[in-house]
Image (cartoon, rainbow, N blue to C red):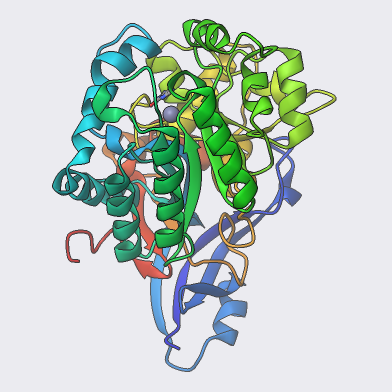
Length: 438
Ligand code: GUN
Ligand code: ZN
């Protein structure tokens, strides 16, 4: 066992902070350290205490004055949409039909899927994202390229081959049988290999026939421990189209309920326009609504009602994500900034402790993975990031007047991006400074 001692200011949440003054929701060490070995955090705390537990002659890396946080977790994005980002469309359905579906057709080619997978993992590391929950394309080859690259990078990833059998170009359609067989094959080949988790991934109700939704249900019954991901209530036209395709359902959420897709391991991208009944159904089943700020603004989908969903008798579990390529930035810091503005527009506040909790421990809990990721607790994966609040001249100038941890976090989320990620550690290994050296 080769141990490394990593020194810096450390911040890790223990629960959701209720306010800016809720200091017992996190552990902060002004001179902190992590002892890592075999991909895990062995000890964390004050430098003095951790150093006392370290073996004689341990290698030390000093990141002071930078801030060390658990690696960022992105709970919803599309790996085949790296070249879709910034496509000029009026709304979701136009964006899907004009740009996104044609682009995803290219992933039938293994060489293309492999090339984009390489870029994808580079961008995750560059932006400090150590776990992402990804949609691949409908082609099994895209999932193979994704998971194989995840193993090469030793990253904890959740992803799925998309199932879609209607309302898209021919090159992007499977069938209920293919959706079942290929998803099973992906599970058998990749789930539990390296740090991979396979997610059952019916794209959304518009692109799956009732027969394919039944197949998704069968897979969920067969593999109850797997994550499930789909889209829900993103755009008014999408909702109307879905309800016309499933006239027997009470509403959009009920479509998924009828096929057993709601549940504590299910992630629903967007959830902007849910009725109270739908929010109740989400809450009762422990389903997760995924807030995708940059995407919701970029596609003009609407303002995610974070408080309406969470401050209610039956609260809905919520996570936060980029939704690349409807989303416009890989950066979870940029994502928090846009989340803050979305709440501002609704007369609400999102304090920086709450937002940083969301993208670390909160997102880990939404994935039921907080025993492994999302904190700096001993025994968890050694995935963490080193943040520099003075990464650009403009940030350095502002940093001169920063006097508190809350100010620092807020500066980082308001002005920061990949340039503020001084280092990204994956399983205890510095991965950003060594990008390209693989
Ligand atoms: N709904 C179905 N597919 C997609 C997608 O790729 N992106 C977004 N934002 N919404 C979707
Ligand atoms: Zn999406």
